[in-house]
Length: 378
Image (cartoon, rainbow, N blue to C red; front, side, top):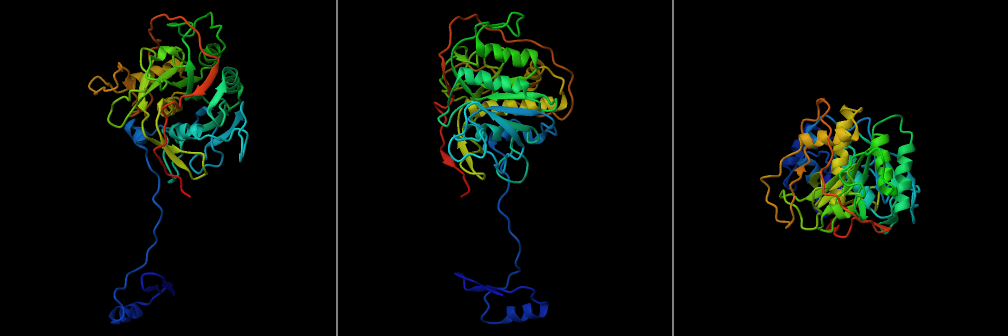
């Protein structure tokens, strides 16, 4: 027996039917109700994960490794139990469980969108059965260096993950152009260190590389790695099937994916979630989708993965585009990925040759990524 303060009631355990009947007839008893167990509300499917159709497919990314090159991934997060380990070019600062722990939040958010597990808690990712690896190349302020990015990608190339297919997500970028524009995996590789290592990953080691288009509202041909042919470049859309004005655009953009007001995992605690916006949030949807393709077709090349995504994508021809920029790219759709499909035809981007270089200082794509609300459970 126990009193229930504040409501003038009490709780009785193991009442016999006879005693319950007597209590119900007692004039001092207003009501007698059976007790029952209640539970906290469970897993949320973010609108973007639902919009691309991830919950409908039986392909869940099993047997694929997703490497998040970013600010790290929150170690011990309740929704990222598939984090297998990582590597730090830039070590975590502050209260960190590992050098590749996240001291910013950006990388943890990307990881959750790509592959938050289906455990009845928090959120669901696009590829919940894929394994995650944190490659911390950005600091707690979201900045890094070209040499650090190259070092991180080389670590992924050399990392022994048991022979599983690999996907890299890079929600980061800077200004620059493609020094080998219009050429996909040419025999004479780029002399630009960053482009060269992406070519090495995609062309020589069959690693699918997915990148954010950028948040400057400019043609993506002026941003790297978005401009590189060997990467799958992703623009951001909102829940009204429209593009924000800040999403980069152009012929180098391969796919559109949800990137506005995205709920995902966060680094503030092991039970923390946050809602932010950016092409950084769109890119991991496609990285997760690539993992779905590879879980069913582990021998696919990065170009076959890209073509599988494009062949299954949704037309945006009827969409209302209020961004002020051209966005002919298709929208990510993973419905139907539960059955194996024949290898798609290979083909690269067609772009206008450009010239120019990039600035040597790196930053993540957070110029317009905001946090309108926080769902941290404290």
